[in-house]
Amino acid sequence: MPSASEPERPAGGVPVVEVMRSYEFSAAHRLHNPRFSLADNARIYGRCNNPNGHGHTYRLEVTLRGPVSPETGGVDGGAALDAVVRTQVLGGFDRMNLDLLITPADGPTSTTEVLAALLWRILDGALPAGRLCHLRLEETPNNFFDLDRDGADGLARPTFTTPAGRGQKANPA
Image 1: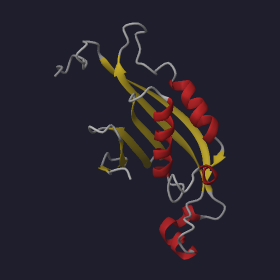
Image 2: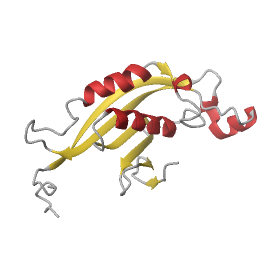
Image 3: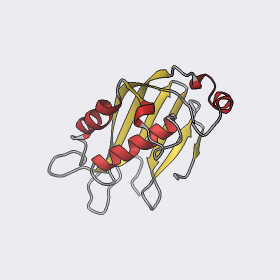
Image 4: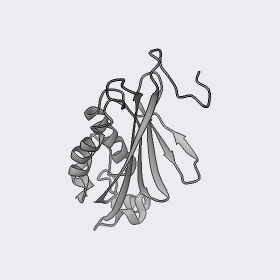
């Protein structure tokens, strides 16, 4: 185990680092589940069930983790991260209605939890295998959601975090 002053090094002796980038996009949605009655939707989702919808400027943080390449001096996929996010996320979600993009296969409605899991799947499939280690999607300064790759199976484990730092790990479906 490395000391507090040394970076983690796998068996090959190359440091393992995390590269994080931050992005913003704006999108609208309405929290509404067609399986529920109008009254139940209003009770469950409150003002977020407004028939006209509402919007957010989302802040997306993406973190890649891996060994520093002796050839390039960077983490595999780090150089491509901006292009992947620009084409796969910003190009598809910025200034869009999330209700038209999120399908029932993604989740029951366009919550930020469902959106974060969808963005994880998109980015994890477009970046080098296993490099995506953390994703944070901030809906408001008081409402943000974290996904981490942890555990032996390498699956994303959502963590729903409050600003005070309290969080709850949940197993993905």
